[in-house]
Amino acid sequence: MSVSPLATAQTIMKTFKVLPTVPAAASRAIQLLNESDVDMGEVADILLSDQVMAARVIRIVNSPLYKLLQEIDSVRQALIYLGPQRVFEIILTSCFLELTDSQSRSPLNMQHCWEHAFGVGLVAKKLASFSDTIPLDQAYIAGILHDIGEVILSQQRRDEFTRVLVLARERELDLHQAEMEVFGTSHAEVGGLLAEQWRFPEVYIDVIKHHHGHQPETMSPLTHLIHISDQICLNVGFCCKYESAEQREGEVYGVDMLELERQLAGLGVKRLSDFRSSLAELVQQVKQTVDSIYG
Ligand SMILES: [Fe+2]
Ligand SMILES: [Fe+2]
Image (cartoon, rainbow, N blue to C red; front, side, top):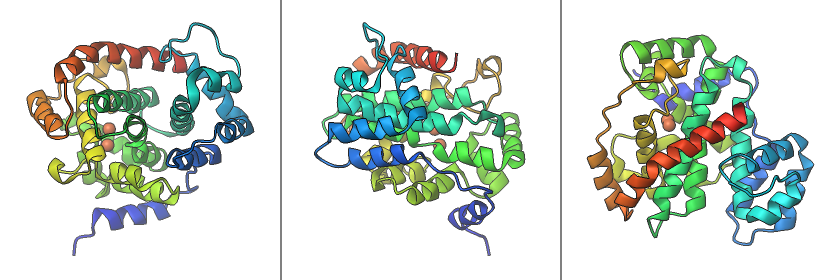
């Protein structure tokens, strides 16, 4: 009898030496985001209670992403200039950075992973801005978090994940397909189980679990949006399976943009020509921001 990918993911997670945690501050911030009244004071206290996180927030605030006219050097100043919504985004961004910072323990190039996650977040947010139904903040956060299982799986099962990368390159598979061949499960199942353990809101758990589904029409609107943004990002070169930028150069994914645009129209995303013309700038923004964080 064949074992389901979910059952395999549960077995794999039992072999993890240390169960990865997200910083308590990030976890609290994700929960706060789902409440209707955001308490600014509480956000500030959360941020100030974690010095590493506060330092990262300052670094991101001063990156080209926010294009501020003056240097920000305290969390309180950041809160005043950017408001709670942007600060939430930054907390989440910090949370992902925290996980990817331990890069020596993963065969993945973490700068590429980070570009991918950040790219999907920004593309999804841009697309959501052309729809009336998908909240911008959820789109960004879902983009940042969608492949969190990949980071963890690659850190925890390094040797097998190295085989995943070799297989993906040799047979021109995407990482999800190569993981299924090597592990019998994928980062989607592992990430979904972790997100449940971290008590992420259901909307994000759904995205993490189902963004590689084969039937986009059965996905929730947010998961479908991330599924599409994921492919757009692969198409512009934000992919994680190569060690160096040179190897990654010239990778062609053959993504059917017309089909994606048909699906976006079905999701209620309008002004696709505006999106198309903003994409090059978005790609530049992602590259500059990631360079400034990693540089
Ligand atoms: Fe994925
Ligand atoms: Fe992805």
